[in-house]
View 1 (cartoon, rainbow, N blue to C red):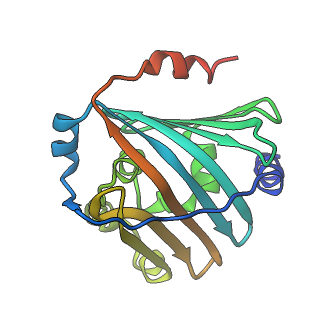
View 2: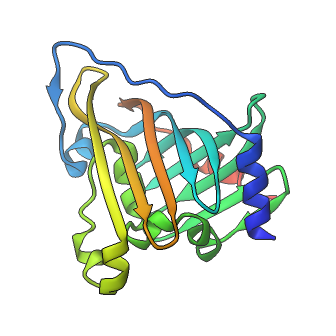
Length: 202
């Protein structure tokens, strides 16, 4: 039932993505440097999935410190799925089927979490490539041989070689996930994360 619910979501949702290049570029920073310089990060992107689960999920994001909130919409603009990410956990609420999913249920449908932790998703949102090599050591050799993880960089929003995409592919299961960041803005202002957290509750 869980897989069917998410399949229905992917069938309902769709999006197009663009990336722009500009001049007068500035170099990217480390995650820690961004947290010192800015208080929040907002933007939009899309998740493309292929394999057992196919489709496109456009989303907007709001992130502050170790908390990230993703809001997915359907093709007519209705709110369809909320995802809350902290350092070690992920919670999702399917608004179409009125269901709540815990970490284990979400990771079943997001196999990229085989090699990335929840906090790594937040780093990607901020534009930082996570160091997943330590976790990769704990994965069996057969799984390592079947998995590829690639990061895409582009000059975007006045930023030199910004992280704008992540691609995961599992040769054994034929499943793949691409996360593309279309726009990203780091802000000095704080976000009321308690307000968006309440959106996950019934």
